[in-house]
Length: 156
Image (cartoon, rainbow, N blue to C red; front, side, top):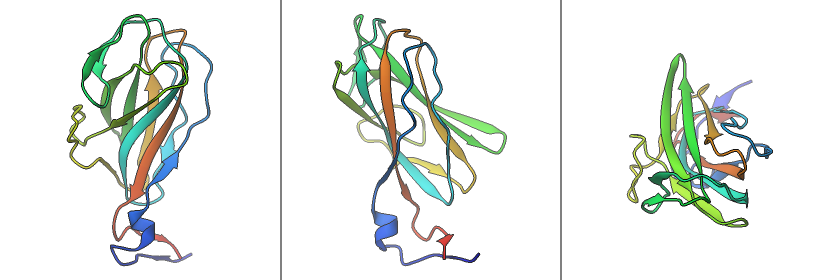
């Protein structure tokens, strides 16, 4: 099999894609399916649709501001595994009501900000996944928004 890279403005590099791990039942600290980078990528955001609101209280970044959820919250943390190194992004507050959606733009520094620094870089072979917080009643369906890095090698 051969690989190729295309011009930096090719639609494959400009389009945003999404990885959506399988939904999970309620339960604390559930880790969702890992996503393996097949080429150089950038993870821009983590989203979550709330199926069942949590019952815990958390103070964390929710994608817009630092908030304190009051008896309705959950959290989500992103993890990047590169070789033997693990980087953590979050935890981020999920404060959307049942049926609501929360989008959290993530940054390479792991710090929440409304002006995130362009996402988290993944090299080919890195893995990325999200894990729920400690609330035992919440049910969240996450998604990971990513794009291929310009000039990343893809299958021919």
